[in-house]
Length: 353
Image (cartoon, rainbow, N blue to C red):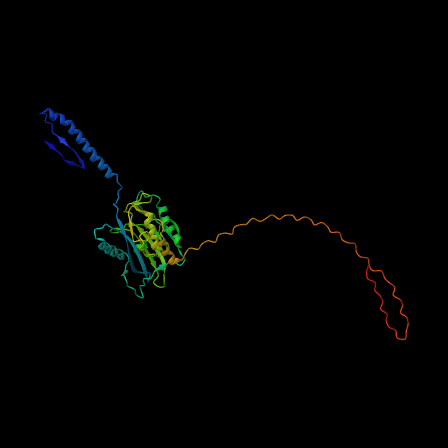
C-alpha cells in the first residue's frame, strides 16, 4: 500500500515493498527516483519562499490622505496639516481604514478637533502656509529604523534637496536625538525632525505641519515626519517601497504643497511599489514657485577680456628750433623842428628784420 503524507511543506512518498512480480521490482527504482525528484522540487520551492525578503509585498498602491486638525498647545490654538500615505489593497475597505486612521491621529493630541472639508471659521482658517525665509532646517533621528537599511541618509537628503528647483531650501539633515512629537501629541520642540515610528493600520508615512492661525498665507512654525519601519523600505535602484520617492513627496508637504492632478508629479496623491519618483516634474516646480517664486538666477561674472600690453612709443625726434630773431635795430628819429605850432611828427618804427 502507498501513503503520501504532507510534512512541513515537503512531499514524501513511502512505498511498501511487495516483490510479487518482476514488473514491480522494475518499477520500484523508478518510483524512488520520482519520489526524490518531487521532494527536491518541494524543497527548492520552500527554500525559495524562505529566502524572500521578510516584508516583501506585491505591487500595491498607496493613497495620499489629507486632514486638518486644530490643536491647543501652550494656551494657543494651532492648525496642523496632516498628510498620510495609506495602502489601498483594492478590497474597497480604504474609506473605513481612512476614518479609523484619522480618529487615531486626532486622539494623539489632547483636545484636538478635526476640521472637516469646507469648514472655515474665524478661529480655524484653512488657508495655505509657507516659510517666509524660503527655507527650513531639519534633522534626522535614526532610532527605530529597519534593520539592514543602509544609506538612508542619502535617500532623505536627496528627497529634501530635490525642492531646490522649486525655489525652496531644506538645510541641515544632521543627526538628532529630538523626537517627532509634532506628529504624536508631544507638541512643539523647535526642531523639524524626520524619524521612525510605527503607525496604525495601513499608514506608510505621515507628515504633520504646524502653522499659525492668522495671515494669508499662514506662517509655518514646525513640521515633523514619521516613517513606519514595518514596510519593505529600499534605497537602491531595485525598489520595493522606495524611501527617497516617498520622502520627496513628504518634503513637498512640509514646505506647503498640496497634491497634484498630474500623475507624473511627485505630489500626485498615490505611490506604487517598485517605482522610482525622485525628481520633480514641471508641475511640482510650478507649484512650489507659486508659493516661493522662482529661484534667483545668479549673474555670471564678467568675462575677462584680454588687455593689450602697452607698446612703447618711439621717442620723438627733436625738431630743430630756429635761432631767435635778433631784436630790431634802433633807428634814430629826427629831432622835431621847432615851429609856431609844434605838430608831432610821427616817427617811423622799424619793422623787425
